[in-house]
Image 1 (cartoon, rainbow, N blue to C red):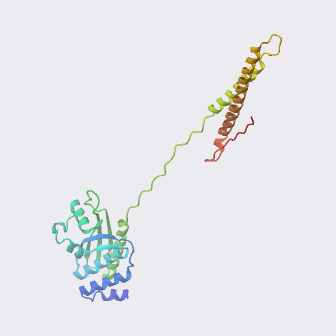
Image 2: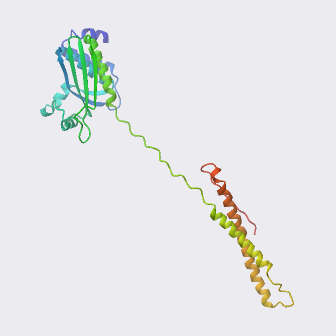
Image 3: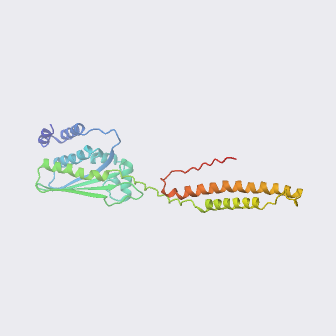
Length: 280
């Protein structure tokens, strides 16, 4: 069916050919469920040996190539109709003009196409302009060209398909930048000084308590008095408290020191728990 349409396109009147091309686009191009990219083509110029029929065929090839890729295209007729109320915007290339065109037509890009025809030779140029940003650049964001030295009309139309395919990647939405992973500062290993100090303090308390026990006078001696035995009871209780507290402090300090000493070789995220059970 498509080959028959290509053979017959040179014989069809202009209006009939336009509706035929539109029907072909509806059959060939699958509809997208998502919103399509909108692009305006205000200028499609043919210079040299071109004719209105040739211009229509080449324009149809270019537009159909974009539509087939999922782009919603406003052709020169659509653009001219929408800009009738603002004729000063037609054909302008300045940054404020491009921004106004983008706002009025609700498009992010404007495409201007120019084809130089010399006999059977074609040079096709598509310039893509951006309409977004605080001050859109008047220079094109990209320029694509295709050249066919000796072409039939059907081959030239196929080149317009290729030109549209070359423009399509520049219409893609820019990829969102990937956030770099946040590197956390290495956690310093816990210090060994506090538990070591606690263990040594516990040993000192134990030694002090034992020394008090060893130096207590005998309250049953001949020279002993009632106050001597009373003092011994107080010293005995104090010495016992020192020994008990020293044992607990020394045991806890030693256990914490050992756990912190082995922490660097343990797997990340593991927690060492020390449980002490002391009979009293």
